[in-house]
Image 1 (cartoon, rainbow, N blue to C red):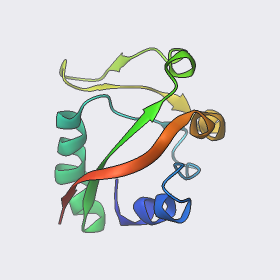
Image 2: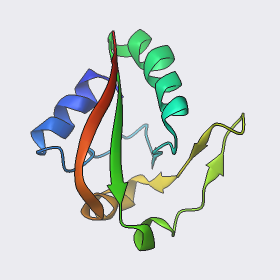
Image 3: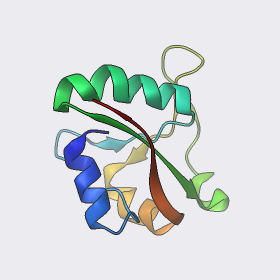
Image 4: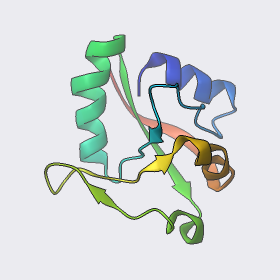
Length: 104
């Protein structure tokens, strides 16, 4: 993610992802650090001057409703959470969202 989204997560007490923008109908958490690193380093730095990789846990029973999507390479696995379901998704985050890598 970029700087603006990270600031909103921090403002939530590191407990939730911010609502999607109108042009973002899906929240797509990625399922492995290597893919998240590619996004942060290769896309977010160019778009916002910084990119961050976060880690968080979600209640397994809840998150199982979202099938794993493979987009492109076999490494590129993510969930597709409709924007209107993000508040409920956030309620099922266990613990806090943490930053594990930063790129500038």
